[in-house]
Length: 259
Image (cartoon, rainbow, N blue to C red; front, side, top):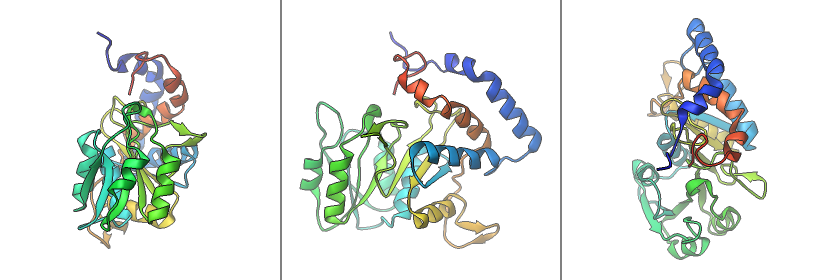
């Protein structure tokens, strides 16, 4: 049987860097939204070609916060793939919206532009394509449909860190996108972690509020938010792995992991 993931082999290559980063963090005692989180957000944004990358507690939270920040809520419909992990639909339900499932292309396992357009109603507010197994959906066509019908495009990039369409990264096409850093992902941390990307200053500001109990200034809470901050120690791991993400993506299946 071919194992899905070999995290031990991957860790052996980066152990010294991880231990060194952990030791420095423990000595500094800066554990919440500290320098490694801030550095990782800048490094991830640069790699993905987006203006903002905001760390959060999980990939599920990343999708949830993205939907919230883009104003998706009760009575809205969000078109998404019928073939995905439950977190995609969970995030839509968290904001009170209705997931509308459409079928996939049997060759790519991804949602198709034709099926999206057929499912649009007066209540449709957003489209959430899933880039399954690291293979991007047809983003140029999907984005054109969203622009035509004035819909939000929110990408589920849980499995697609580093995947590109015409040399443009997934997570940089839509109004916002959510990434997962679950350990088995190609860019995975040592627990749970997530990231929201966007080019919108307003969306980024809302996500930063929502992830931190609705607060911009300590002990001042402007909205009801969530406790969804990327952990500083996880950011140490992610910074080390981000430097090697192209190497990981190019490696033969199961040398370190597969999607």
